Image 1 (cartoon, helix red, strand yellow):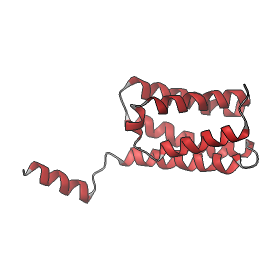
Image 2 (tube, helix red, strand yellow; image 1 turned 180 degrees about the vertical axis):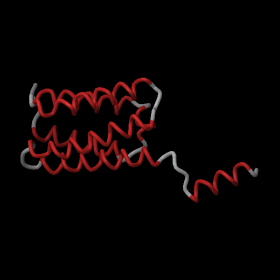
Image 3 (cartoon, helix red, strand yellow; image 1 turned 90 degrees about the vertical axis):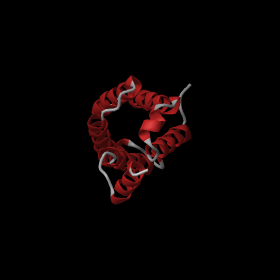
Image 4 (cartoon, one colour; image 1 turned 135 degrees about the horizontal axis):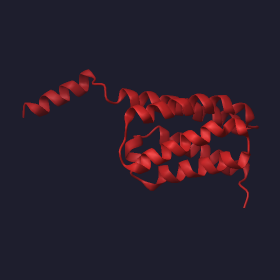
Length: 135
C-alpha cells in the first residue's frame, strides 16, 4: 500500500516531535527505532541517488541506538550531518511536505547541538550536583 502525502507529513511531524525529546530516553522505546525504519523506507521509496547519504546515516544512527551504548560524539555527528542533508533535500519535497522537511532538518541540527551540549555542565547542574554531594 502506497503512503499518502498526509501520511508522509504526519510521519515528518512525529519525527520532529521525537527529536525534541530526550533522545536516549526515546531510544529505549520502540518508537524511535520504528520512526527511523519508516524514514529509511520512505527515502528508499523515493529512489533518488542524492538521498543515499541520508539513508546510510539513518541506518548507522538506528544501529547505534539499537546497540544500547550511546556515544554522544557519534550521535551528534550523525544528527548534524542528517540535519544539513535533510535541509538540502527539502528541494525535492512538494507542497506542504517541503516546510515539514525543512523543519525536520532544523530539528536534527538542534538535536545534534543538544546531544553535544548535554555533557557540559551548567551553573544550575553544578549547584545541584554540589548540594547532592554535600548531603
